[in-house]
Length: 512
Image (tube, rainbow, N blue to C red; front, top):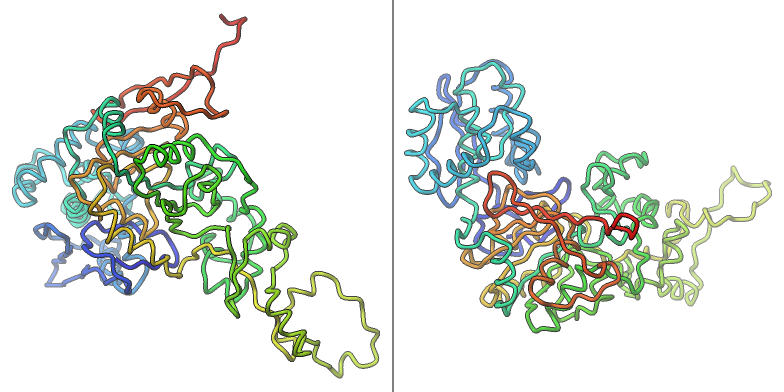
């Protein structure tokens, strides 16, 4: 697996990758093969799905076939059919289309794993017991609108992909389902890997990235930054070309959280203090784990943080807070070491002379002039300081892959994923890479469909964590957890291991 953070849209993880390698990710073997009027979609995975014919039905389907063949050389191979296969939560999928029930979806997925793809197809679509269109929903795939009205075999190609994707997933461990199971795993485990995302910091007022209404990317779309995709704010090539794009919004994402941390951060620190924490892989750049007391030897900041900053010209590194004033003022911070060297050599940049400016009075320079293009000067400016957060297109720290491969994989006895949708590689590939027999717990507001966790605990991360600690008999002393708080928990209909957590507002004396 490549440890480079991909440029562009988020990558869906490929569970069939066997090694974490520091090289470009291999191209997936997704090809279009034409023979007369029949097209086949080939999918290469750990378990090969028998080919299903995808017969052209008009221009739309021909275009689909062409797109399959064109995926090799684009980022779209990272998220196959992302604009067609919507990895949405199954609950809303079942409400909105003619879909199988959650119970039947589970039965179909278990049948596929038990009898294999060829026998599965014989018992379902070929027997006429269910249409390919409806069977798609058992694998979390919404039937695309452009296929509506076509013969059922028009859906075979997408069904092939859905089956292949399901077989590539880790199989859920059937012995772990209940809240008591989760608490028991917490109490007996001694080497817990915790993988965290932006959801553990939202209770502190820090937005996550992908929420439709409040996420950072949604907010950036409204600013008119002159970029095609809000994620390009964090594209390293765009930063090098024009750092003003990043610094025009950096003040809005700069963490102003000195000393504060959420109950979930406190929980991770508690696991550490109880000698249960193997590693916390954090995707967050706010460095709040340090506020809670998580030690550097237990923390891998996969996407870096604002804790330090580095000059992009000379490599000089400083503490992050030394450039915070410039960031908050909307300025591009420059390297003091470069500035000192320029002054020492008497080579500070000077405006080029121009005949057009001859005879004109010089005006007093404003602070905005600091960000004028370097090509207006005879001598290059001091280097731009960049916070040590990992932009799309940059390598993740060596510690990420080395610790996972040489340390954690052989020691881990429990995996807990909190507050992340696991959509950005290579961090999204951590969970599939770990041994499949190790129990996995997922804690977030909404479930994910591209990974089979053993127990899903859905709700506010802080509420779920506080309830787990209460049931385990662990004290989680935090001002954001009201005294005596008890969560209301219900099992989601159709599932035996998906639990929804809510908490009632404390009643007032008058209400009592």
